[in-house]
Length: 162
Image 1 (cartoon, rainbow, N blue to C red):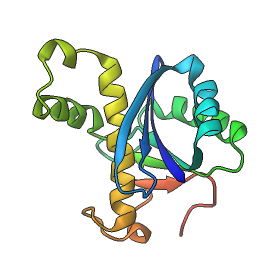
Image 2 (tube, one colour):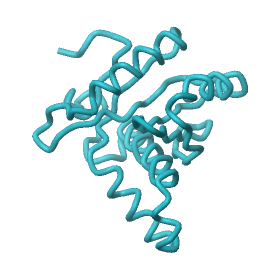
Image 3 (tube, rainbow, N blue to C red):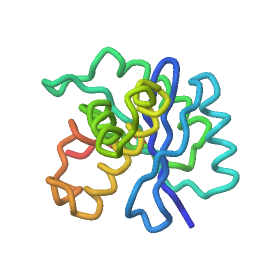
Image 4 (cartoon, rainbow, N blue to C red):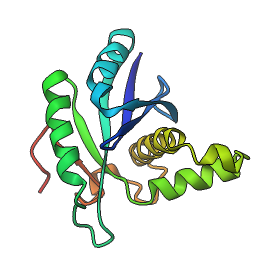
């Protein structure tokens, strides 16, 4: 069955999450060194069918792309070159690190373990992917995926909506 892959891209590490086959919930999968992410995704795609990549889009509070957006754009070009048939959607990643820390606290993770940035990255990827899944199912605050402003989500595999 096809899965969606959520990605929280960083200069040093990349958090990866996957959807369940029914595309209801996202699960944190792995944190991978940035230099190895394309190879990692190729191995994953050889074992599981990937329907779409959902990549966190770094945005400032005013809705403008942050300085990290340039790095994400370079990565997305590499991703689309490596997986030409798989669409890529950019999803607003504001507050995902804060939410990841909150999830670790709420889940009872010890303070020492919460300092592990690998955990934060893969949980952030799961939050990014879950946000996308919730909008698709109509369970998010937005409700209708067609009404989502481009500042929250945008498909990079097709022309922008008008």
